[in-house]
Length: 251
Image 1 (cartoon, rainbow, N blue to C red):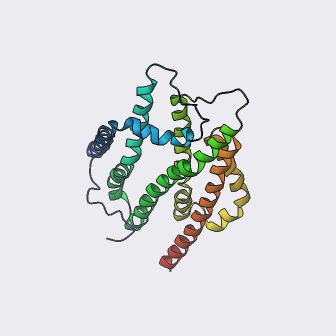
Image 2: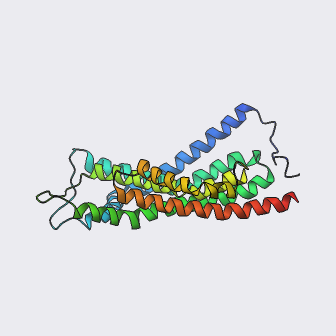
Image 3: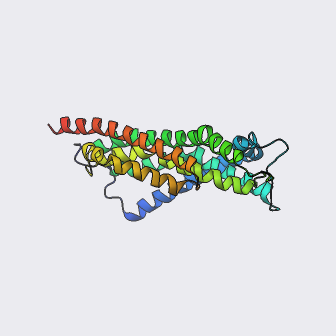
């Protein structure tokens, strides 16, 4: 079969069958998330302790995190463990998405889609790791150092969870910039040269994205904007490679 046609043996599959397959794959994904969650729930407090370590290690002597709501000591680790279960199950979820859409793709599209799928997962995890090991220590050290005299730092565990989850999602999504750039170039929507000419605007957009996706402090905004710009340049680099390959195949 040529690359100009989808390699789909079930092209005549009725809509109901497609919806049934979609339902089955969604149920499998949910089941995997629940299985991972059940396995991790016993360690919920340990997981919260690990995620909160960047702040707790910088608290003044004698200061602790607090729970201002009755159910917070249970609900905060519970919610965090659910998020962690979702993150860990993400490769399986994306695999189910791939199995659902792959039959409708051209052969050439499938050859490109698999590396993009794998790199998307890796970049998302890289964004989470960058947030935890680089961003958290820097911004928490800054916040702790500028506390007014006479003010005790005792962060609520729910407030902390909301704060770090926003940063995790922001950096996880932002690290997908190379994938988005490559897809735009591969789809013919734009070209590396056109994107290169818009580089000054891209830098401005990176800082706007950092402002919108992170808490209102210049440190976390800058720590997101600079990696996003670097990742954009990486996307341009790989986009040029794909453009050259497409030109050779066209010849």
